[in-house]
Amino acid sequence: MAGDGTVPPVRDRSVVSRTPFGYLFAPELRQRLRWFVGLRWFAVGGLGLASLVGPRMGVPDVWPSLAIVAALVAAYNIWFSVRLRADLAAQGRYRELRNFAIRQMVLDLAAVLVTMHFTGGCSSPILAFVVFHMAIGTIMISTRIMYVLGAGTCAAAITMFTAERVGILGSHPLAVDGVPARLPCFLAAPLLFALVFGVIYLVDTVTSRFKVRSLELHETTRELIASTEELQRSLEARDELQRQKAHYMRISAHQLRSPLGTIKTSLQVMLDGFVDPGSEQGRRLLAGTAERVDGLIEIVNDLLELAKMREGRNKAPWARNVSLSQILADIFDAKDTYARERLVELVPDFISERAVILDWAVPPDLVYAFENLVDNAIKYSRPEGGRVVVDHHASDGWVAVTVEDNGLGIPEDLQDDVFLEFTRAPNAKRHTSEGTGLGLSVVREAVQMHGGHVELQSREGVGTRFTVWLPLHHEPPEIEAHTLGVRT
Image (cartoon, rainbow, N blue to C red):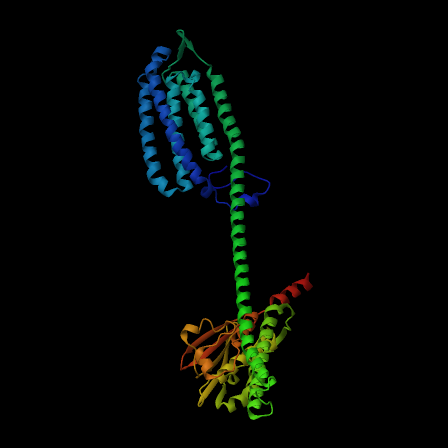
């Protein structure tokens, strides 16, 4: 496995290629470095012991040579230990840890070669420790780096063997029963080469698979966590939807029950004979009952309109090239009489603007939405001197339609809730009993269906300004899906 973050070929590289190598293996490498620093103290002790007992076992030149090597190994091991605890433990980045491991390997291999020189050269039993370091290094760092270190170690060992052979370096042969024990260097050199590269290859073959499996396991775990979080969000969204449905049903039942109770009471009074339906009092009761029934019909119509927008988007009658300006002009014509009755001036500033055309729209829904805004603006305007201004401006692919009045205004603490079902401000209720509290919910639903949003600015006692933002080139998902289906 390469130290730059690559991984060995696997059947499905898409699984592991997304996982950052250093992120996953930096903690593991840090633990191995700590283990290696601890293990090195055993090497220091072994070198010190060998320097003392070596002369008695046929290795006369190990004192004080190996004692000096042991002191040097102990010195740089202390430095490595301090550095690992201080800097690298705080940073923990893989590249620093890898370079740290490489420096340890280079110094250790140098110490092993020096030890080999003083313990028999070609015949040194320390030859096995070179192979041991190659195995440890392959586990800790990348294979490519270990191949470079292995080649350098073999080259240095062969150079040392040659220098000993030709007399450039002094020879320190081992002696068994007083007889020098020598392994021919022409056998030691290729043996060392074969062992070094063979061990690197074998260890890499095993550890690479574990590393790839670790990457795959990490990626699978991460995907599982993401799926679990997505499921949790879905469950929370479902619970929230259920809560909203329960709240919606409860509020709807309350809004319907109150006028129905009044109607029942009025009718019961007349049925029980307490009031003659033909009398003046009876006619007033019947008129009030009729008014309540009209209110119920209005609530039901708004509820049906809201349900239609929420549930029937796929079947909505989308039309091409819809003139928003014409829709607003038709609403002004329809509301002119109502405004005059309430002494409210309607100001169609949008007439002076260039006509606005929407690529796609559902005209009945837009009519219903803007009619609600204009109707509310008229209804809640000042009793005298009321003024409702409607305008639109198009730029950068969007059109902003403003409906502004100088009426009651909406209390600041209710401005976040006015788009919720059955929400009416107290000052609006005092001003008029008309209204279901559903109109702005319908407005928001219609605007969102067209890819837009609604903004509200209001000051109580000053007036209200609604701004409806609509994209000019919105293509509804159901139309886009149908178009793609036709193309394929």
